[in-house]
Image (cartoon, rainbow, N blue to C red; front, top):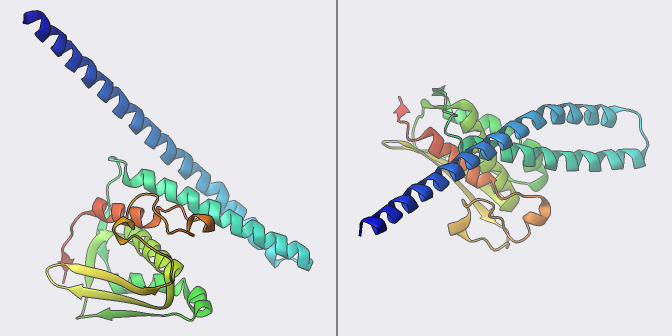
Length: 228
């Protein structure tokens, strides 16, 4: 019995050591992805700047067509880098939100305005509906902006004609995005899962991380009460 107990204890110790080592490797991998993604974002900003200069230059129709293709592919790759950077960020225990007072409606309105050209081309008129006066919320501004960006971008992928955003104030602030969708079949219970996309979304360069990141950032910020 003593020998059996010794063997079991050694097995437990060995198992715990393996688990600890695996967790260390997972943390190291996430840190590496975070650092690489961060380092890649800077040169991509420069690349997009040079592409913009080329588009504004006096070039032929064929050359402009190729520049547009380069820009579109570069934007897709830039989005992929940003998604993996933010994925690593929300899964890192070392990154904490920086809370400040934020005008929720103004922040949301400003983000809707950045999509004005796309709304116009799709003939979509976004509408913000609020049940009473909302002053400020306590949140990390960059995280909250990214959440709105991802929710708006996701709504635009599937919306047909309408996008309504409801803001309700009770004991807390609740923001609801409502849009009619195209016929693309979606599994609603999986929409916030990592890497989930609709059937055609992967072919369009969608990583399936947008809503997962939005949910992760909200979890990262936790529950903060409305400041009146």
